[in-house]
Length: 237
Image (tube, rainbow, N blue to C red; front, side, top):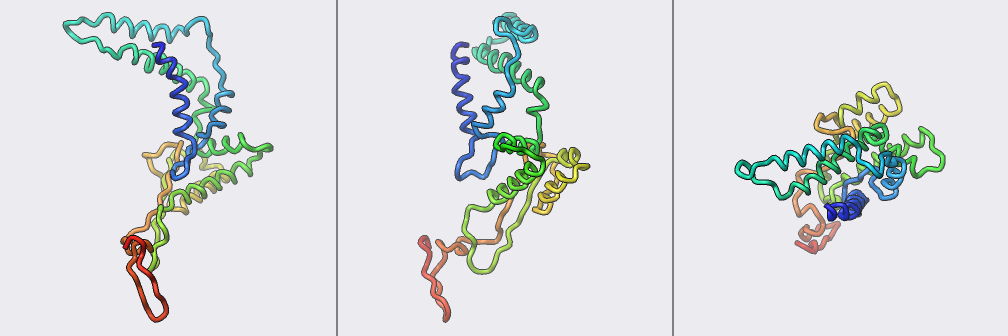
């Protein structure tokens, strides 16, 4: 159990690294930068006691230990991972649910509100128009991140396919909010459609170029010569 407690800081460090922006990735984790996580953490202080356990947590631990103690060797082998699960699921699970329930309005927010909160953390003077503009700019940036990691094909012009997905819950939440509906309509114009498999915490953008071959890329293209143009073979042809 002591090792589990010592591992908490390492896990927090790992999570900070996971959600931090990295070059070469097409995923933007909103409020994932370390400075935002730190501000959220400061705004949600621990309100429990330090000298005694919450009665519900104590009850949960007692019940799990009791079930473990009552296992009969002849009927079931006692799981060696019991104490690990007790810490991860019973104890840490309790605090995770407790924080989520007590701070639902601050933590359980959709993608638009999360982006607006991100802007509020950075801005000196916050107003609604600037927050909405920040969300709109974030949408533009995400569309750029969805671009294929290849050069523009040579030869006959290829027409990319655009698509995006968002949760129907966003439409339900903002159907009477003109400004936020402008954002949803913007996503719609980019090929966005409601998708029941999407959560309110995310928007996905997709862009693809179909019907191209390796020779449509300059580094793989063969040599070409005409009356008006001479083109050397690509480096990998």
